[in-house]
Length: 113
Image (cartoon, rainbow, N blue to C red; front, side):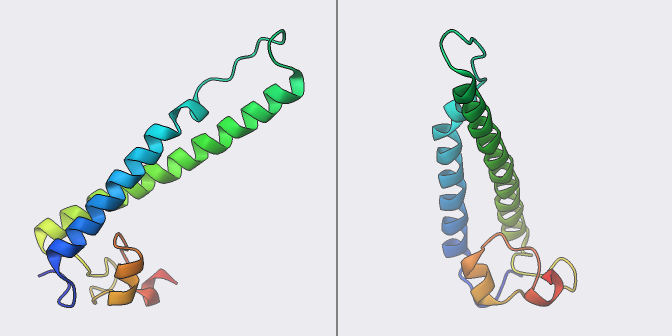
């Protein structure tokens, strides 16, 4: 049984919207993660260093986005299997407000601390 205080279809829509938003952001930032040109004739040293730093930040953001996408997919799977909203540690229901803020939350507030 999924969380008794939440509507399954509303939660599913929210999770699917978050998944699509993450995928869109990933697509838009693809060029920022691309290989930085190392040709000194076209770009100065400091500009290359800035570009490398920007690339590293974009790659780190993409890694966090990939983790969030995994959490969303897991939440959709729990929703399909009837265990959505249940804390993976203690088995109690995660607070409705917590799930509304983070629909992919895995733990209740007590276990997350």
